[in-house]
Image (spheres, rainbow, N blue to C red):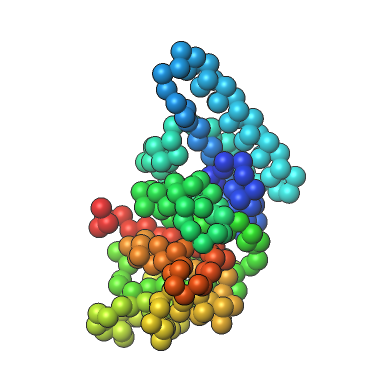
Amino acid sequence: MKRILLLSDFSDTARNAAMYALKMMENEAKFFLLNAYDLEFSGSPYIMQVKEELAAESLKGLKNELALIRRRYPDAKVELLSLFGSLLEVLKNEVNKNHYDLIVLGCRGESALENFLLGSRAYEVIKNIEAPILLIPKHAKFKKPEKVIFATDLKDFESDEMVEPVRDIVEMFHAPLLFVNVLEEEYVNRIDAEEKIASHFPGINVSFNFIEDDDVIEGINKFMDDKQADMIALVRHNVGIIDRLFHPSITKQMVLHPEHPMLILHEHEHDH
């Protein structure tokens, strides 16, 4: 059974992300609903008292979220985690200690990373936490993924395990997987590269597509719209693409909201 970590700050955005994940994998997973609470200041003589109050608030908030979840998903397996520390510290410890197949995080859907659910800390989560992360835009409602897009630079994956979250989703929903080549400038033997990549997805309907757009991000968004795709996956080493998917160029006056859930995969060895 999959282990899925849901991050909550008790906002609508976080709740929507949790509900999305529950609807997607209700019967396939055990969920852990995590709230990290931290002291904003130190040096107060009442520090222990403040910490106890924060702990009580955190647990109360989690129980409230659980009650809302139970109403809609009475049989879902959900465990509560109320942990003291900054979100990054807590997550690093938690991910090192316990294996999670996926971390689910809400994002507000404005166009800048600073406006994520947890301020710019969500971006810090993407950069620093070594686990697959599913970002759910604030207003995304779950619908069965008919098509999943995978933005790729045609480099082979370092391990089969790395792409497991994508494979699980496309297998679960019998969705085709459309690779979109975001290769910038460098030459790659496409036939070899595509064969290697396809070998990680036996029995799955995969196709390879090329974007003829000078602006890769605009190209990806347009491709997703044209294909009416429901989710995009990318590997975290393409962090420039992640940046740009959320930072529309002001000059073009394009408002590229992250409208689609985004699955960010994590390489383990090479990206430090």
